[in-house]
Image (tube, rainbow, N blue to C red; front, top):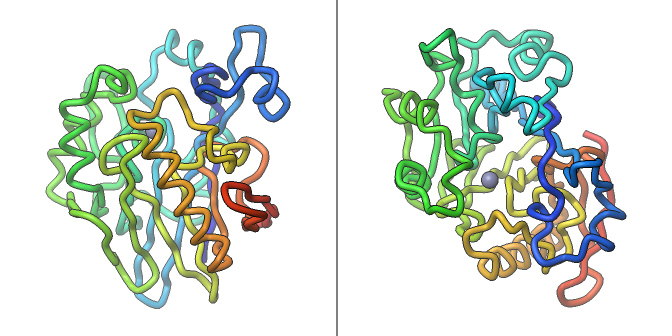
Amino acid sequence: MLTPITDSEIYLDGGAMNGVVPRTLWSKHSPPDARGRIKLVTRCVLFRDTARGRTWLIDTGMGDGWDEKSQRIYGITKVSGGLPTSLKTAGIAPADVTDVVLTHLHFDHCAGTVTHDGDTVRLAFPKARIHIQKKQLEWALKPSLKDRASYRQDDLSCIAASTQLVLHDGAAQLSPGVSVTPCNGHTAGMQTVTLHSAGTDYVFAADLIPIFSHIRIPWVMAYDNYPVTTMEEKRAFLDRAAALGQVIISAHDPVTEAGRVKRIEANRYELMPVEL
Ligand SMILES: [Zn+2]
């Protein structure tokens, strides 16, 4: 059983989110606030595989380690109390989570893997294996100047020290219903996650297609380390999703959680929203 969970609302600069796309175009899809920021969410996915007794969590949201100034800068607001509260509502205790798959280690995807108590940082899901691409962990511990600000080294030290860390080197089948596929345009060794549930493949697109306006191939974030690589990876991802009828789940779209895509012609796709 698959359940999307919106952890937080956050606000990021609309220009940075849309790269070379002119504001007159992107502002129709993502209206900026007075400071030029656009509203996003941090979405996670809970996947309960009762047949195998495993409880999966894909990405972990913003976590609880933010001071007031940072909360203001990013406009962080927890949705329904945030991930821990939503898990509790769904009847899941932190120790019930058997596996956490992190698409990558930028804070808006992994910060909820840890919890802060004063200066103490500890793992939020004490029994969970943590699945990451080896390449992403190496990159995160020594990031480029371009994406350095997206990593919180205190959180990463705690994650990297976990005895439950499972490092993957490329595409991997983690269980019959869960697989990961690496891509490298956004950051080295990011991974998209495919979940097979009730006869349908759901693909969590991470930051390859962070919001659905980005199904347009040239709409690439200025945050990406290798934007041309993102464009190539996105085209292959969308062609595959369209051909196989996969449901794409968005990590950051504030309005639409998920959708199928139809290929109209080369480099042009149409989204058909799907209720999860
Ligand atoms: Zn990212």
